[in-house]
Image (cartoon, rainbow, N blue to C red):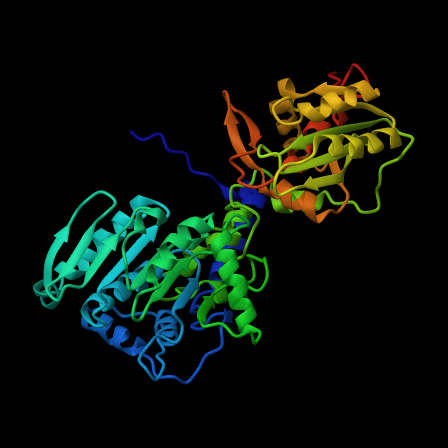
Length: 497
């Protein structure tokens, strides 16, 4: 017999209200359809389009494309008078599970069987994603007698899958951008462009098209974060073109105008598959997911990083611009360098009444080659003499060279590697409880929200300097000063009885 317990929500009004709110929100989307047009897009034109051929081709395969997919295909495949693509670089940003992959597969098939493109290459950040798409592509071909008869061979090879038609047109999967060197495709498909964190991989694919007669790059992605270097640059170009800049590219972005996940208008703007393949109840079930994930995956809003250790809402709730450091109060400081020694940050903290404390980013350093330890030490010593500091904490792994310069000058420095994991945990606890207060600083916020959590031991964690893939010196230094600022003012911190 199953040992199941029923729950009477009448005795838990908070839970009942929460379920009602989710239900009410889902019902507000009932009967609604996602927007067929993107919120942000490059200028449209009246040139003839071959996109209608792709739409008709999909219909012949019994695939009924959604309005937003038809919009992209129509406006991304306009042709000039000489038959060349008017926008040889096309980027589509849309929320997850909206149908990007289906549109990409239809475009690949159209390239092979309609446009006679000699070679198409597809690349995804994760090989498993490419393989799944290849299986789906083969499934579409094998499900059509007409297409199956036109295929010469299908090759299954790990990271280099290939389809070749009797006409000699080929589609190939390449595992990573560098694998594309030495080939000359006519069309390149880039899935989840947000995951491309360096220009080298993009360039190795982009510039294989230089000799192509009619090249095209089609990129598909959900919203990115600060590490999405390629997508962010393309988005900047797209926004500039939408504002009137001259650029032969097409950029289409379905995204919410604000961060309010409870606003139905935001869902309609960002989820074009709503009412077609995405049920409104499924959206309502997401309201409790992490804020950063919802912003990226559902609302197509850019965030610092979707694996942030610090929640954006919690961090911004700790902002107190009316507070500042007191030059007469005991102060703790911490200095941290990035592993590549190109960035550094100095953070200070002081205790406040009511078990709260204040942190402030005092100084940041940046050098594209490497920082000058002597210059950093000179700058840091000036702050140390301005405030009555107890310690300047540092990590031997990153900042020992500066600490060794400060020590002979009488600056009390303290190696902090032994309590760094504890300090990270103390920082998160202080942020989530609201005991931490901070002065508004764009750089401090950016680095704090960029910090990625790395597991350490059995349940422990630290901020990963390398894993974060950006400078988080200010976040690390903030953790170190928190360790001192959260110490109890007396020997007894918790009273019992």
